[in-house]
Image (cartoon, rainbow over all chains, first blue to last red; front, side, top):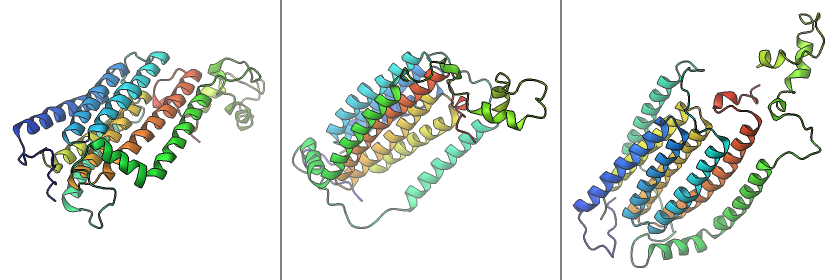
Length: 229
Length: 101
């Protein structure tokens, strides 16, 4: 399907500028994405993620999705990545990620093989299958009027109910974040936090090992959690 | 006029694959989260491209909802990660096998 020409852009041919913008943005996006998964420091990964998100925002502008480009920069680069950096700094995990041993043998080559197979399958299917059928009724993306106006008209008429549901989702997310980050209350047992998750295996392990552990006392709390995992 | 849609769709497919491979390769849960964000952005780029190709604003509306859901997901996911890190010092996904049967 040929792309529908936009009204406020009278030149129909692909200019050198557009090709250059796409090429530079694609290079930035791919380099940033590879940097995210290749950087050993999580802080570097977060900064590479910012680079990728900016490249995608440029491509949004290139495709006349101006509002989404602005929101992409504000929400992703301004909020989400900052949240990532906050958590990285808060937890103190900004040391180098040790990639020494593989707990799962052969995971890395298998991951690369799965990735290559998935990409080739995706490109193959994109060249073969195209969805046909009735067009959506959300409204035209091109034509006169600004992008913000058309997007707002679509959001507040056709997609009004999903728009309201997203507000409920945001409230749920806020409540969930508060509940998750709340410290345990004082009436809970004030034991050290490292052993707080371990007591579950302890009561059931002594029954399983009563015969070998008959010499020592029944609880045997020290050696069991290491052997139980 | 910008370039044709297949260029953008191919770039989005490559970006999605990089995110998926990173999700499989890395063990740091924060980096795995960033890879999920990469995959979401690849899908966003696909939706905007289709919105331009089909001359339909619905794709951009869907990108808006994806942004909201991604923000909510990051908030809750990072809350879970902080809660886990407060209990134990493991930084990798291999340490989080408490729920394993």
